[in-house]
Length: 272
Ligand code: MN
Image (cartoon, rainbow, N blue to C red; front, top):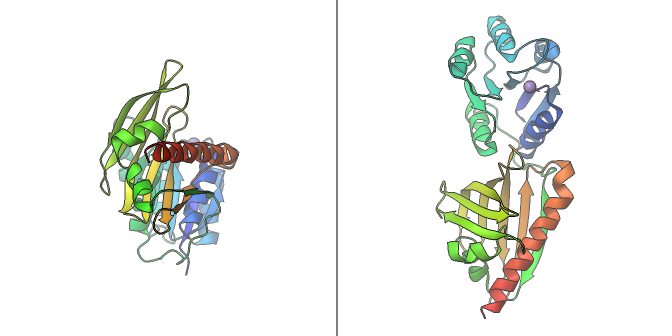
């Protein structure tokens, strides 16, 4: 049985992001764009969990949470509230209304999924998740998989190729190479600092590396990158999957990663 999740969100991009992300993790997401339809949809769809935006026209998420928790047939459904600006006292008000969990924008997708999983224990996701929102890039290297893998976690190396552009200047590379550890890579482009930040989710040398990725200057969304390394001896194939990429960014993201992998190949091959 696939877990069913009702997503109530007036912002079309956020709605799509949530539904895509939940779908990619094997859940069946049902979108609701108009808060006034939320109660009826909840009764019809009988979800295992509700994701509730707070700031909406016509009716606020706070009111909807109160209504759901006052409804005999709906009150047992756990609710994750999502709010744009965490003002003082917000969390308290949302919890008082009856929400089981609370996340504020910018959303950390990794944290959001953790909350979903925590509240969905009784309704597991499908075993194999589709990757409809993923883009994939593949590249071969003429050096060993171990060397290619190591290049991702060595700060000195990373400064030469990861998120580096020909016109840019790397001003900060901070890496805490452990699962749960964070990284921060800042490049100055035309006088503007662009930070790439995230957290390592899997570090299994020399075969797999996974991390979250956000560029707060460009978007308040967070995506995930999952990389596998395969091959023997002095050759290696790298497959990179980027998840949670909005459709309008897919081409650019694919090109961006292809360029980054070209840079990596150049740096590694120059060292030989
Ligand atoms: Mn909203």
